[in-house]
Length: 473
Image 1: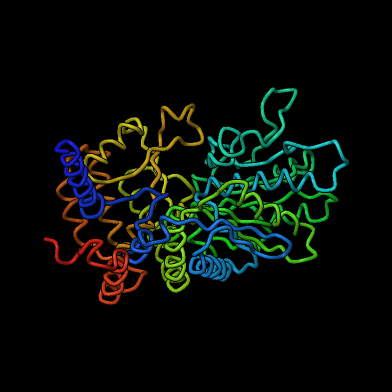
Image 2: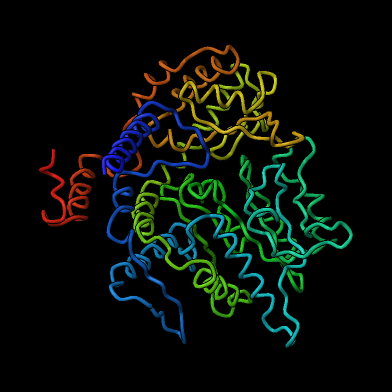
């Protein structure tokens, strides 16, 4: 018993120390992370976090297989409604619990869709040809054969590798698409699925161009946009569905305000040739990929989507202004920034720097972490291997939400220069700097949020016999 109690004490202390360090002493610049608001966090630990709500459409009726689901059914319907408003679309699937799962659900749905109407006894298990962004040029792992695309695309008999083509990029700027080569590749190869979206993501994807090129094909490809990194910038950065994408996938915790979940969205009206694809998406979400779909985070996603729909215009504008200001400042201080200076280096939340003249990316990343600046090292398009990265990838979204503006990112760029170029110890200066940015913006003000959070917290264990959280010292 003593050992058990000591383990709990030790773990509790470590949790507190890590919380204080990450939330109060560090500047977090990981482009794929977001601290949720107080109310979103309270939703995550509420009663639904331990519950199930399996359901599927059967003979036109949505059938739930558990009792006690009235509340969470209402929540799921409201999440879909609020996200449909955010995307300006008609269909939203919210049961995937990660962006990678959202992509895999789509790949599974494509197989089922391609099998519709096939002659009996000739099943297809894989897509013939998929086009995506090359991993070494910023493509996301989840749309690669080594990721969620694994086992969903045929092998090319000539190469012995999966039959995947990469979207061509400009030689002079590998972060931008090459429209002329793209036209040639598309016309010659005619893929069944095109996956847009990246993890190294500073410029728009050529959705409108591709949609126009393939619209008159007899069997045109499905256009899928993995917007995981830029989901919270939807509309300000790209309005993918309006530009011609059939479906958007993504995770809800990078630039979006939510907990760690996934989403699939699109427009599939009755009569659409892709309507049955959406039916297959729903079927692969459940029972194809999930059973329990983490109902606590589903509730949290609704709260986060309320916040996003209310604050998105101001938030999105500030994120993009901060990213451009941060990039310019770093470049002016002697740290080479990737992208085109004429475009402000970036159109998203991401800023990418080249640091090989100052050391290996992994070593520089560790030095920055030792100084409480949290980033991730990144292989750049001309790097031979991910093990020898010459880049660092940063995102401004979380610190924007904690109140940083353009001038603050200028100050931060000086701290980063001191670590990377001059190899100074700036840990105490970073701690002091972060103390100015502890209050979260783009959510309900604390004076309104705290009483609500307190009532939610008390309701989790509503009776003193369970645990009297407010008299224990």
